[in-house]
Image 1 (cartoon, rainbow, N blue to C red):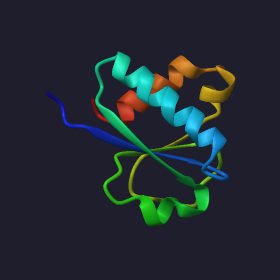
Image 2 (spheres, one colour):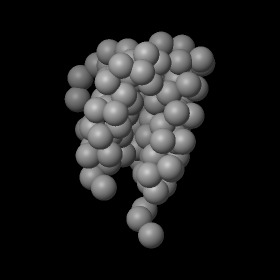
Image 3 (cartoon, rainbow, N blue to C red):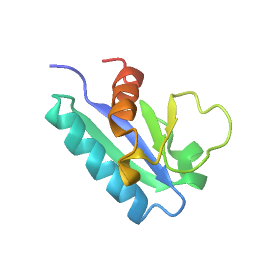
Length: 95
């Protein structure tokens, strides 16, 4: 069984937007047989919460190189380009 991956989901306030994205990610990836856990935070908290994270998915710009892949997208909110972003996320998790 593959190892569980951790995705940090960041938005401006770590409330509504990141919750929608996190729940959507968990459901979509689990439906594809990918074991993930999500953690949510504000964009300003990403650097302090990056330890142990395999990927950051954000709805807002983030500062500099965080040492893990970062995917900035609104696709989980708008539905536009969602399938392409899911493919990008799976590739970033190196599955």
